Image 1 (cartoon, rainbow, N blue to C red):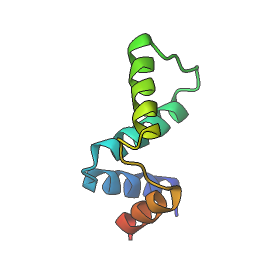
Image 2: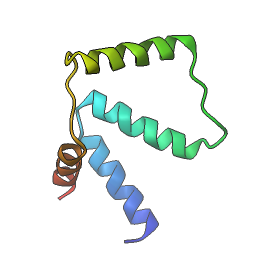
Image 3: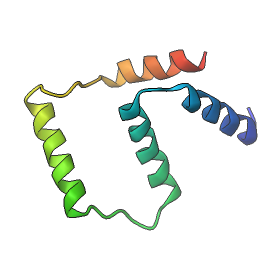
Image 4: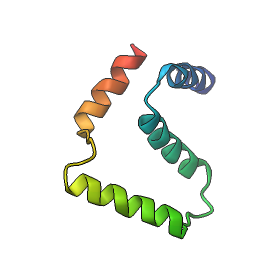
Length: 78
């Protein structure tokens, strides 16, 4: 698969995804890859991350195993 075709397929798949949390995770991965100048966490983001971490530890937030995420992602592109 060519790089151009791969980019087109990724765009097509992402445009069909409605899960905002998943999209935010993908955006984080992609933007970090595109911006290799470093990553800063401001106070507001740190508070949000700390809250999410606590919610995860307490079982309040929904979590997914890597296998589940991978299966879901692969199922969307086939």
